[in-house]
Structures are given as C-alpha cells and as structure tokens.
Length: 310
Image (cartoon, rainbow, N blue to C red):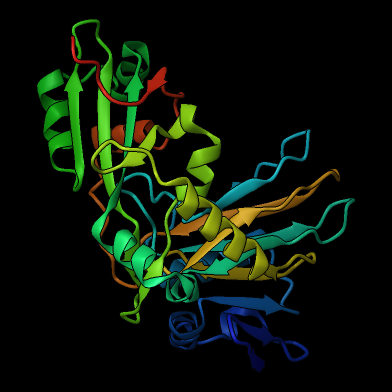
C-alpha cells in the first residue's frame, strides 16, 4: 500500500492484489486521529468485505443507504448525531456506484482549524456556550418506538441519558431536550468546532435548536462559521469501490448537491472506534428510545421550548 498525507486527511492506495482485510486497523486509527479522515482507493471491496473490515474497529451500526432527494438538495455541515446522546466516534462510507452524475463528493471541514481561525471573542463564546435541541413527540410515535412499555420504565431509560431531560405533557406528548457542546475534544486532545449548528439552522422544525440559555444562535457567528467552512471545504470521494472513514469529533461533513441517478453510497456509524462509550441500547426498550430520538420511527410534531402554561 501507499500512504499519502495531506494538510487534512490521508489516502491509502492499494497495491495490486491487496484487500481491505490486509490493512492493520491500528494504522488506520493512528492516521485518522492525526489527519481527520482516511480515504481508501483501489481495494474495490464488496459490501460484505466492507462490513467485515469495519467490524474490526468496534461496535458498528448497520450499513445504510445515503439518501439523495429527488430535487438534489444539499445538506449542511454537521457532525453526525451531535444533536442527541448517540454521537458516534467515526463514520465509514463505501461507494458501490458513483451514479450518473459522476463522483460528486462529500464535503468536509476541519473543526480544529475552524475554531483556531475564529476571533478570540467567538472562540470564547463557543467554549462557554452550548446548543439546546428541544423536540416534541406525539404519543403515538413514542408509544410505537417503546413497544408499549410502562412510562416508569421509559423514564428510567430517558433519565440515564447524559445531557438529556424530558417531560410527559398532559396531552400525551413527550417533550425532550438535549444539551450539547459547541466545542468538543478530538481523540488527539485538540479543541474542535464540530457540531450540528449550521445544518440545524436550515431545519428548525426538525432540530429545535437554540443556545443553552434559550436565546438564538448569533447571526454573525453563523455567517462567520459558514463562510469559513465553504472557503476551506475539502472534497471526499467518490469513485466506485472507494471507502472513507471520518473522525466525527474533528470533522464536520455535508452532502453536496446531487442531480444524478442511481448513486449507491453506504454509511456506517462506528460508535466506539476511539473508545467512547455511548448510552446502552442493548434492550429492546433502550433501542426503541434511541430510534425515537434519532427520528428513525417518526418526526417530531413540534420543536422549541415548552410554553409557560404547560
């Protein structure tokens, strides 16, 4: 294999006859921790080979199709699942087919560099403030997700989630609130601006985002961060058979506009690649609550804070 390192990211190029299974996972983790993402080209794995390789890095969710809407709309910069307690350490991607529009890439931005480029004022603001995500779930949605469990059992699981609070309302709605940092630590110990702020501002009816004190995120901060991100975006992929893994605490990524057809890009969350322990989801109830919070079983019926009369 040949390894090429860049200012951000590394690339591993296969020699003839090499397979993904031949790569030492310790090497990949070392490169990922140092460079933010690793791109693998020339290996041409099957989906089964990809899944077997990624399992060597820890607990992984199932490989899902990356959704490309018919209108081709882009998705803003975000760190995967940083709006809920189930943020994975890393995200794996496999391109099985680049699609009719060619290799339109996934965009990524280095949160360590981004934070360092902010003014001292905004750096301190980001370190001392948090993001709050307030969402309301219809009774039929949360009951479907929890399989008819008693409210006392549901509350026990919800109370165990870090940074998370909830309240059952008189009409049966479940109100949830998650508070997340704006600045996180990478596995290498560096501070990083890595969160879902930019994407959440485009879909407030899904995220219900505010600062931790309930006030809006300052427009100047949003514009400053978004401008820097687009000016310093790096492109990842895609050609058929290529693989990538992204550090979800250092990098933010986005879906670029895509107007082609038949792209087959798979994504797989690796929960504990760097050793992070996520909330337990080993029971059917805990797994159902995770699916609810991640909106796999339905969308929130409302977002934002509780009214004073509730």
